[in-house]
Length: 307
Image 1 (cartoon, rainbow, N blue to C red):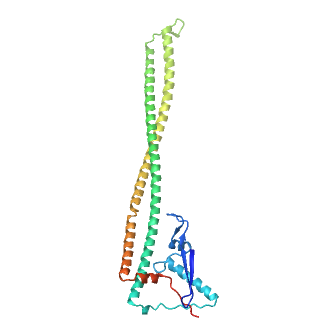
Image 2 (cartoon, rainbow, N blue to C red; image 1 turned 45 degrees about the vertical axis):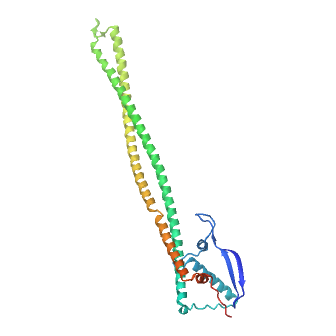
Image 3 (cartoon, helix red, strand yellow; image 1 turned 180 degrees about the vertical axis):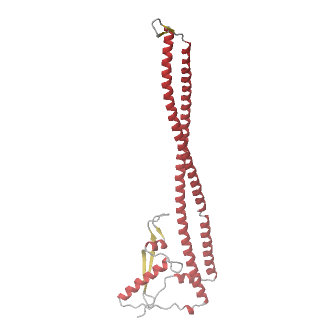
């Protein structure tokens, strides 16, 4: 509370003082970090409303009165609490009092609605941040799935190429059957067999080709087995990523649904309705020519000290 003016009045039986101050709140998250607000200023001092009859302002006023009473007692000054004499109120004054209470309730309702709107806006911001995060994760998963598809396609192309090489090697190995066409004859010294030099060279080349083909075939078979294993692993990983992708889509859809439900249109409509009611009350008071009386009634009450 920043006091900017204080004036002592001696025009009545009991001297009294009028204090003008500006209530302000600090460390605000919305709007200016420091702004004028009686409710926020009272909250930061520990005065929180407890229903429509015990507002933060009433609790603060009661607290100030108690402090004044303690100061008066320390100086041997007795505070005579006068009754409200409601039984003697005129019909006009009674209506004015009831309208004042209704205005206070409407103001408190608008304040609470503003807080609820602020809370829902913060929740909406959190939901939007979560949706943005999920969208980013979804794009990353989608790119990973696309990369896996490319890897699988490359592995399948390599596998097809190796199968073609294996078929070629098998075709070359089949030529070894030409050995049956080689003419052999026995030598005069026993069971040794001799062949013509050309046939021997042909036989040797075919034998080497057979060994090379068998080695290549074994290598290709191992490679094919490894590629099949890698393909199976990539397929399973791809399926898992697709599953995670589907789950992210569902979660994303659910969060978007929550975001749509948390629209502030309904709250703004409610605030508008309360403001209309508030304006109607003020118009009613004005029609009764009670505006000036209401302003006087809302001023701080003056207490008369009796010695």
